[in-house]
Length: 446
Image (cartoon, rainbow, N blue to C red; front, side):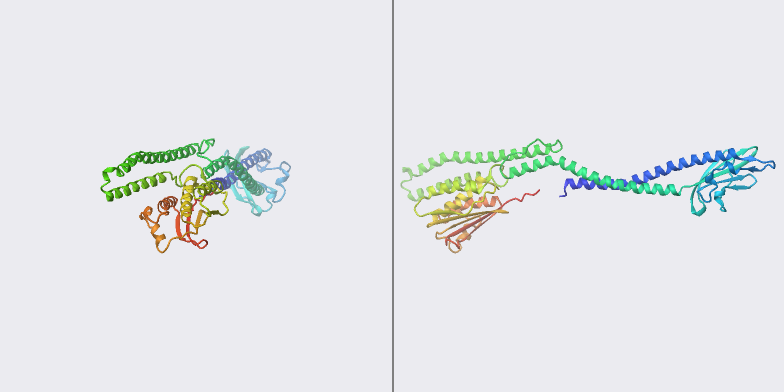
């Protein structure tokens, strides 16, 4: 899944880059319109000034004294031009036009016309043509200005604006990166809480988080509490049932051993075997009820902390002379597996190994992508297809070879609960039985 921080940054960058050309184009258009209005006002002022300087000579012809014209209209190709157009068709161009012609049609008195045309030397001209009546005669005064330099300034302004906008975008992305990183820092606490729950160091998420994710945190805490309650109720229900059956089972055994069945030894033996079978099944289900599974919330297994007390208890139980219980280095990693489940598994494996070993039992643990358990003993081991028979699904393990039945059944239940693997083979080191168990760990990522 893509990073939320990266998605925000890409979204901001894409939005700004999409709006930036529009803003630059709109800004340039606004400046261009403002310049055009300013130029028209100036051209209208020049036209009024020219109209005021026009005189009617003795022959009735309109004249414009050269002294009344500004120097910019006398300089050839200066970019500022005018044209006086009389009703008779006579034209009086400005000296700045030199020998060029400004194509303007007559305009009725009181009207005005604005047009853009090409001027001398391909200049981009803005032309204002206005019609007037002076001393009874109609005339048209057209005043033009070259907007080429202004257009170049506008384009330069747009380029500078684009460069400044890109620099501002880069700075904005940096600021946004810092703001988003600081805003999302509260999610790091949630992630750390999840890791602490995985390690068994916490049972719920802290709710001191932003309001946007507080409902999610509360829902997760509710589900964690519900899971813990259901697991506790399940364990208690099975435990209560097993304890409730103990008294009737004890009375049944007493009646089997009573005088009423004295004359039927075969029936007594059969009933005693069935009663023992019921007791073993009860004990097995009671142990199963204590298994938490990979979804449990609670203490997690830590080899360096949990294995030494188990070894000490086994040494007391199997303290006959000459039996050595060896172990390799015990990792101090926190394993994301319920500690009671793993201790139950190790206890059954080591207990079986101690029952059959001659002098040595060896335990080796490794933690990586999975918890790897290896138990070797120097006992007689298993011959032929005995190992496959013990692990056959549906086999009655408690009726198999003494010492491996119920214990291996519980081990198999735990391995199945964690989707692990269980292997029985001849130990190449000690010559007896080797039991290997692999319990995969869920990979956690950022």
